[in-house]
Length: 151
Image (cartoon, rainbow, N blue to C red; front, side, top):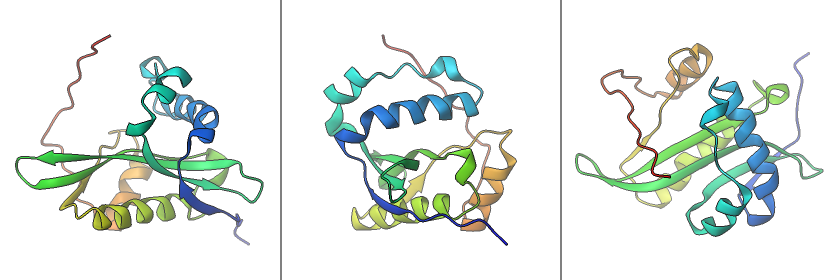
């Protein structure tokens, strides 16, 4: 019989920051790039007006997963939403949390009148790629990500 989990979704809130920071580090480790995670509680508190997303919580209030996003304007499409992270803790995967989280982000993108939701997925993460294909996402490898650390 499949395992079930009781959870609800709600917007991220400042009181979540310590738990979220731990999940961000967990996600960076899962992504095989823990050295890239340099965020801090101090940064999150100082920049909280930029933090958007949803958390999946169990009845005890423990965060089991999260989806973070930001709004952007792209020259080719117009108003867009970028899904920054979608992460569900390993013990709670394949139970519907990831689908519920991304569905909630899609709903928010529509409320915000976005024309596109965009995100990236690791080349090695075939499970995630298949999950996104089942949603109807187009996975293209036309672009290569670039970044420039400013501090």
